[in-house]
Image (cartoon, rainbow, N blue to C red; front, side, top):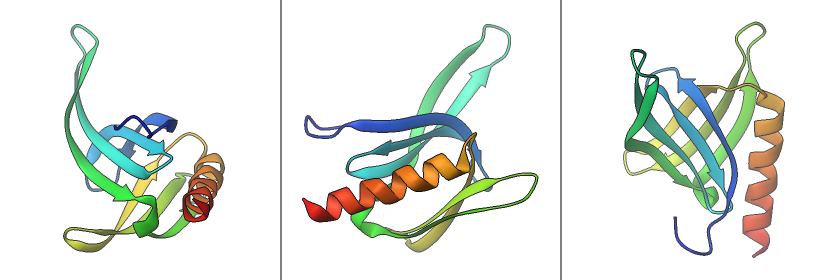
Length: 108
């Protein structure tokens, strides 16, 4: 993160195809860092950033699911347009916060 970038929200979660990691929303982007943990000593370490989508490249944000709820993000990546589905605690909060961050980024 550069000096002008501020972390707005962060949560341990799982993405349907990428597995466990940390979802981070900043005032400039949405990122997902893959993590690996060890139960024996309760450690968790970040391996690599799998998803890094600038807010201007986010095409669509929505929530889905009845029992297993997901926050879904479609964005432009280096590999083309992709959709990611994250199992987070508060899908409604994430959806609202991402949309608000996108609007604020557009107004700057």
